[in-house]
Length: 414
Image (cartoon, rainbow, N blue to C red; front, side):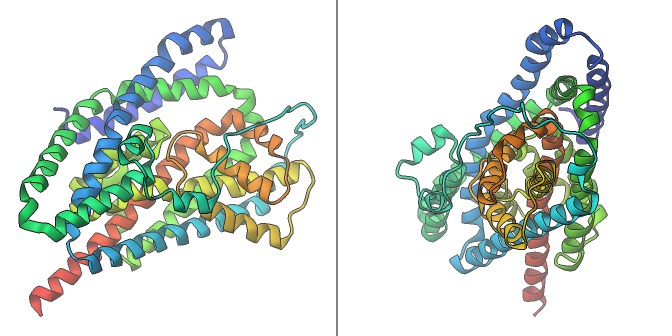
């Protein structure tokens, strides 16, 4: 099996090569790029994503069951659950605030000429109301939830099974062993699928850049740079400070160990699709406790969207500036509140940020049609913000694991 270092190197080479090919394809006529994308790049990229997505539902279910059962007593599960959700909601609110501040500082909607009269109607899929999402966390039919890929419902059912295994203990040792064996099988399959990752990464990035075109990238450069600055600031400042002060660990160690998963996230633009790789990187490269990683990271892939939150904040201000519709302080507070709550229960799949953005725009009275302005380059930014999203999931698991290790050590010494 390919070594992790070699795999990371090959994915990076594929990403650079794919970006160069994508740039070259922006100069090619549509009659050439269209068939190449349709019959080569898109199928190769989709096969890679499908291979990983094939493993996501069983991996999340098995991981959450083992993680919950491994945590043992309900008090420990509750403590870790409260810390995790608090961490995710807090960092999301901070991310939105960073996005808003940068957007007002840079003013991306004032730096170019944008035509809004012929955008047409943009009708994104409607996200369910927050209360409906909370009620639907408990699945009426767990098998149907797995079939539909309803991640929050799968997680909820897995937590119940894990608690039962922990409570029954020796009575269900055989079932617990079965889950551990299933986890081993899924881990082996992840390594097998990852041998295809460089090819998938090349195809996905070439297709994304080639499809966006240089004109779209050029006209939206100020918006893109504002979002990218927000993503970098959040990673280098907020996550690093959290790891340093809460986890008492070196942030450089974290990013070095987690980098392979970030490259896959960049390729797939999907937190869910990257989950098998991010779990492996956290547990093997960073030494995160398996039971904590298995509980926190799948949950984060569903409810933690810091990168998407930064995009929503910048995009909201950008659209308000393009349409010359100023936002009040109440509107800005509403953006923070709605975007934070909307991150809960929104699937970690490509393009979900546009659905959440439509909710925010509706809430503050901005035209949803403005989303059409950013669609052309959203896929490229989606790749970047997904890398941040999964880094936040892993950072939370890393911090919790280090805190638990110190607590265990103190109990042994005490």
